[in-house]
Amino acid sequence: MSFNLTGGNPLAHRIRVYFEGTDTILEGMPVCYNYDTTTNWYGGSMTLGAVTAETTTAEGGQNEGKYIRVELPANGNLIHFAGVVAKGSPGIGKAGPSAVDIYVPNGAIVPVLCDVDTTTGRTVLSIAEGQEELGCSNGTATSRPVGIAMETETALDGTADITLCKLDPNLFLYASMDGTALDLGLGYTLTDQYVTSAITTQFLPFQVRSTLTGTGAGGLIGAKYTTENAGTACVGDVYGLWSQAACLTSGAISNAGKLVGMWAKTHTATDAGTQACNVYSIQLSQYHGVANTGRTAFIYFDEGTAVGETVNYLFEAYDSGPSGSCAFTADTSGTNQSGAIKIRIKGGDHYLHTFDNIAGAT
Image (cartoon, rainbow, N blue to C red):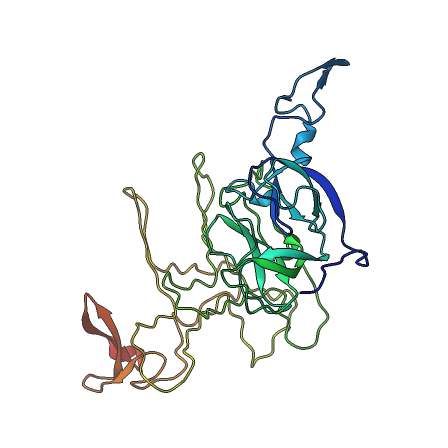
């Protein structure tokens, strides 16, 4: 293995901190700031100009120990990732506590301790509760991605060793206190993405793509939005997901185009074969934990209030036939009766009759 020299790396920055733990200090070991400590560093505190010799600084007293004292990653401090132990640091190979030098996570490529196989520029490395090395996120609230591997290693799976990593937690969208809520105060916007573009081809400002390469025993959820009112009575409407498509310029969409508020598409990897699972484009599940004195509906259609907002169709099927988009079945047994739409209720097949003439429905 080559020497992990960083002297020629202009971005790598190392600082000295104090490791409070009793574990053996290792090169590349991740540490987090002890953000809620009340133990200070200078051995004293000042109140109204008077210095008191004590090792404790009460919360709110600007304790410098918060940015000097570090510990192993733990549930509750993963958001306070400080960096990894630098090569040549004091204390390496010895049990703590000890002063240590660390590389701060500023986007530099630095050596880290890792125990998973990696692919350069692809593998996301995370810190996890109680772990002395970086690995892949286990999908729980007790891990947090902090960098991307910059070497391909095939002998690290289960055996920790040094590899290079671009150390930068800001590459990943992660806004929580290790699975518990951060405080947004009075409820101002936490994430606001507002972009414009003069592009003349497809405009796609936001995209989430999830690809599962394992067995996925816990299921695969591409995106999950949970909206909960956990405080006082909500005086406004509550929406789990509000999707709105708006055309703010007259004639901005051609007659051949579509204006769609939400598009749900479900498909498999191949158009041939038989699927063992049930396939739904949209699944609606409505639950009320308490008695509801208002109206309930799986789908609510809001009528238009302005000129030109009249809805022409309850829904429109792209095509017809037994294998069409509407499960349409031909039926001419009645006057003007064109067929039926098959639905399933309580495990049995039922049909909604359709007519090609409104007079035939009477």
